[in-house]
Image 1 (cartoon, each protein chain N blue to C red):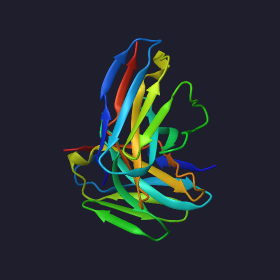
Image 2 (cartoon, helix red, strand yellow):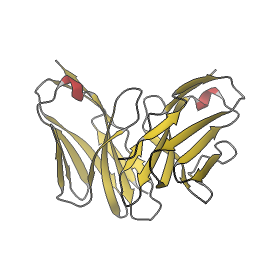
Image 3 (cartoon, chains in turn yellow, brown):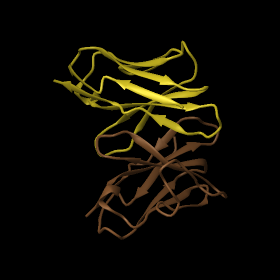
Image 4 (tube, rainbow over the protein chains, first blue to last red):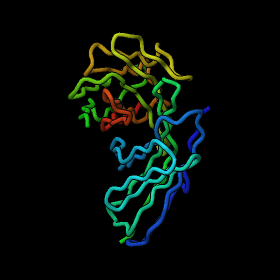
Length: 111
Length: 114
């Protein structure tokens, strides 16, 4: 059964203090791994898709990386507006097109 | 990316009643998904809705409780039937565009059952 585990559950950073969020996954065959940002009261906002081990994607202060067992979302010099819940999801190759989501990391960046 | 409009954005409903949530997409999409997000928790897939076929429900969700319509490639509805306070949650519509793999989400419907 596909599984996604995210850590830590919550993270508080000072503005400018870089860190990484972890997403460990178990999947029969990986079609894609996805990172989303969710602000309170809103739907998840798509950030990145990663397809194979070794792949990296960047967007502003965020960089996502992928290995065969886990993905990291690196946040460089975060700002208060980066505060949000970050969700990781996987989609397998079974053909069902289901996304399995982790429970997310709640990030708070303090000014 | 697809623009997804969900209605209503929030509602407070009496127990025993039903609420229908609408999801409108600005482009034709093959895959549409309905999720539930309970307070402080992640997203749980309710069902996958493909145009022209019956929705496929996940374990723990049944058609009598969550009937879904998918009349065309840009629209779907989810009904939450015979509601109880345990149905209080955020319900999210999601689509996967043709030829793409990432899913995009609507803003969600915050449902409170009293």
